[in-house]
Length: 321
Ligand SMILES: C[S@@+](CC[C@H](N)C(=O)[O-])C[C@H]1O[C@@H](n2cnc3c(N)ncnc32)[C@H](O)[C@@H]1O
Image (cartoon, rainbow, N blue to C red; front, side):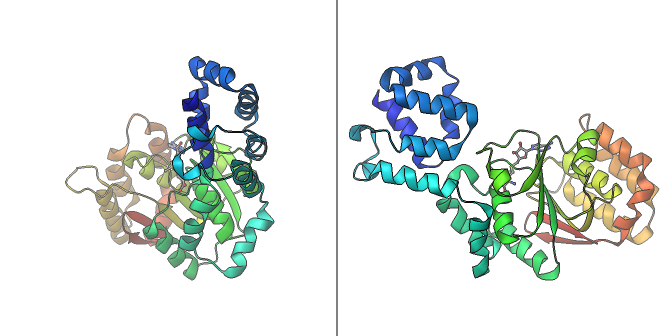
């Protein structure tokens, strides 16, 4: 019995009730909660249906967790107050979130603040190098719209909303966001479910294009990264810069990202789009056939890539017009 309480308490206190959902799929776990605490069972059951974090934390603040089932560092704490505070944090509206912007925090300060503070359903998967890159881009460009491909916990969407309060945010993921479903609404981000290597989905997500900046933080697979970049470039979907995060920069492979960059460099010199696409076509896989075929057929539209600048920030790349 105490195991159920301690599992639920830990997931709540870390701001990751999403873990409870995973376990909730197990009938034995469900029966165990029901047996231990009928009120807690009702609250969790409601949360699984609604994914409403604010209600969840408001309700669990009324539950009396047995002291012996709590981690020692929380045994002295008042879980009622703790969870009510968390409910308040989760109910912050964009205008409240934006107050942080008045102090002109940069991306790195925002991620540092966001991760421990707004609990962890919106954990930001960004490191110092990403933050430096984005600050560098923002110093040189006025960015007023962003499409981010790859949302996961929604942390980066949250960070962008804080960093650029007036920016139009668009996001896309192959999965429904693993998070409080209201996060994207709070962050005023227009979400599209779909895959970055599916042409139909790309057409859907780019209905408001061009975006000033596109960020590919999705599958991190080479063929996907290149295929999506080619397709979105052909569609003229980005106007200032296109970032691909977390590249695999291992050399020695026939098809490596560095080889793609070399081909692009040659293309910039000889402007021979046919030769460029003949070589780049080798990066396609079964999964990315459709997107590469689209690129071959429409290769004439890639001429603008011959003029773009390329910069690396660690293992991230930024293409700029
Ligand atoms: C690294 S996480 C994104 C992290 C987030 N941008 C952040 O910084 O907090 C990668 C996400 O990409 C999504 N993804 C994987 N393949 C994808 C695809 N083909 N199209 C769109 N999204 C994809 C996954 O579902 C996952 O949520």
